[in-house]
Image: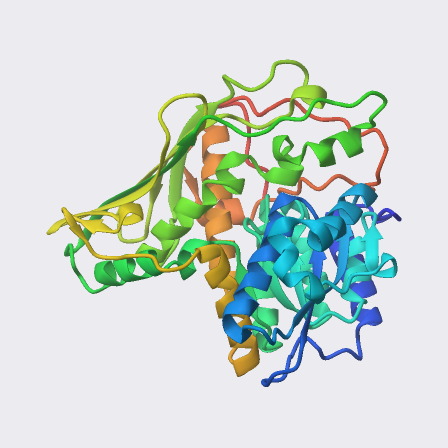
Length: 437
């Protein structure tokens, strides 16, 4: 796979989009016409989340069109050949995919690998792409897909730094002009119980909101040791969750779900933040082997109206807590439990990972595309905002953090090369970069 040759991430974003844009300039498949034509899908990022998203999409189509499905998986791409080929094998032989085997049309010629695999998938005649690579690549891939006029399902988060977030805010506006559908992997937004509960809050069920809390506290995440002879860039990509340029830290990659719920309730994003945290339970050793991310964060956010959000996330063994709570003048809502006081106010009837694809496909076919890119970018940047306030142990403002010249994408990225890793941020010594020019 060819590597980007640009001097920095901004050039890489521009160059990669230009390549995809030229290749697809005559293809208007992204503005998919309403009707019953088959929707051709490409997968970019063939790990567990990507392959699961394909299954969810195919199940969604079976609910919509039953025995006459009109969705086909026609191309896959990943940085690594074994991942791309493994995904195709899973789609064709995995027991969970057996009901959909006839819809898998991927061939060896449409199985792509390398850092430019996303460009090849976009050029393979697809109408809809699933973006499920490590989040550091999301702004690059979103830009290319939007330039190519493709409808999109993208996993959250959509950025890992201020440069990526600014790009995604721009892309949200551009994608709306193009009338493209973009559904994000914030599946709670499509979950019946959450929708019903939050509607009650918006209708005033607990009165004026006074304070909010959310958490994703659990025991940890996978870690892959370096294989013999494995070069830095390949090791980091294979172990992406543990490197900041790829993951953004676990507050960004995982806790974004809970932060998104609170933003949804508040109909806004925070404007101030201060936090703390550190790295107490990760593998020991230099960052080149052990990674850079922290294992606990505690952040106090503040919204424009003065309401505080107390946010916690942890990767340390102990009691699990994945939740959102809202306190109002007339009561308390345990949002994730769909409870106001002791009363249940919401109930699920379908897997939200499937429902989000039902909503996406229906919106494309109806010619009324859902576009969630702005809201998921706001929630993503809420997490980045809290992360940086915690790294710095300082009160920070949203606008200052968003304007920072923070760009974590390595220059001249290529597979199987040396790629030095800086140590994990030291609480209180990390400094917010100056404003971007």
